[in-house]
Length: 267
Image (cartoon, rainbow, N blue to C red; front, side):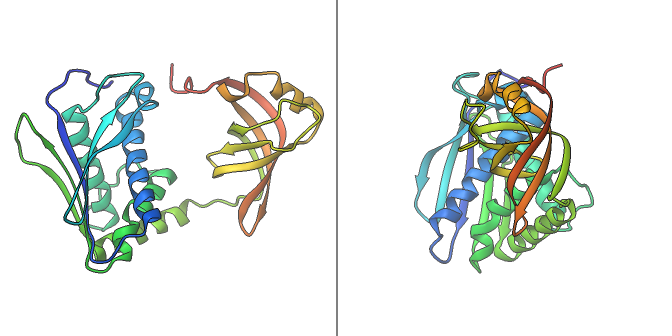
């Protein structure tokens, strides 16, 4: 579980030493994916309950390339989670992952599809800009020690990104067709058993974005709509239809069970 004792504020710096202007969408996606990777690290290694409320905030943007000093907050769980050990271990995890992707290490961290997707987006601004460099570091301000730093130039970022894409290709499974007992949660829904307009849901094991939903019959739809839609997750069987390889329609064939979202990690 997360160590709630503060052991000094931590300076977490994300720096892109760019040679050319960085497209705003690439920078935004890079920082968003970095923040998501931090949340996922806390959920998998520290406290999944706290991770739900963790947010990374930009404390300061400094001149001289793109330099963001970041702090972590969990407003509904802890007043501040700048726990030095947590941040240092997170940077070490990133270092292990990038070393593996670069072929510098045979030690493979536990990485899944979402991790690889995050790494692809984190590295995108550097991979696009020949001669640029990414520096990620953590320093404990009150207890000086050797900083934990990741340095990747453009060639290394491109190589790591390509390795992450190869890992993603290896994880790909046929999307079209029947998927049994997958986890679905609602993105938007009409509380009307006789209407399927606007019904969209997410099944992360299939696709990360919302997809239109229809039901094989009215009984299953009424069964699902009887619950508190946006606080529940559903175990369902679905048939998936695609357009150009991307899911475009989920046809729900059966609903096996439902449970409160956020409860899946509790014993």
